[in-house]
Length: 296
Image 1 (cartoon, rainbow, N blue to C red):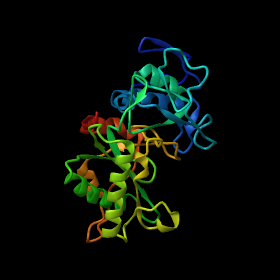
Image 2 (cartoon, rainbow, N blue to C red):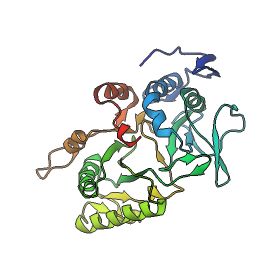
Image 3 (tube, helix red, strand yellow):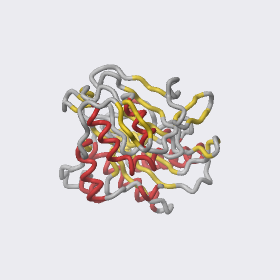
Image 4 (cartoon, one colour):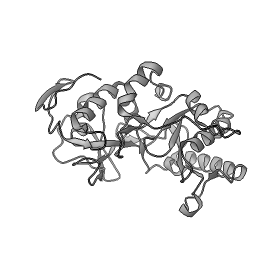
């Protein structure tokens, strides 16, 4: 990543003058990752992150004093937001839209480590039908990413038969998301029902591995195939966003070769799939390019 001074008060970003504060503040104590390094990360991934945010209302999770302290979920745009930050009102909430790196930097400077978006966009102020579906694979301990990878391969087979190409994303938390591009002809409810039906079918076929019901007591040792992320009111962590966990993991698109190598085999071979730290994302972009490009 490009070097960023430890303490900066005013910087020029995309033709805007921004006042950045407390750049040396440690936001991730376990790795001593500073706010300046977080801002630098987002500046580095902006070319691939911005297309994932484009046209989508952005909900933020903010950690004012770092991940060792409390966070809060923020939907409404802060009252002091600059006039050049675009916004849209949906269901009495005024959300920010993020179209360029200056707007992104403004939000990250507020310690918004996590950026969450819906599966639909807004055009001329009006929400559209979803342009992608998402399946959230949520492991119940002791299940983990290896089992998520195994389920991801089963989902790819089923949805591939419907002509849908999936992009796997390790979430930066426990599990994984699978994204597919849609043509915009289905409502959110229709997409939700499609994924719910898939989840039920896979649960019947693999009851020891997959669960489709939200009941937490059913989840230990299995992968909850969360169909509800397609509900219009729901949001999912944006690909390339950081997570507010102990370590600075990022939601990271993966290749199917990685998923296959990470799956549990019949012989029980240990998987190799792990969550990705912010420092490793630029190298992955140089190696694989933008794996989410197929969805934009």
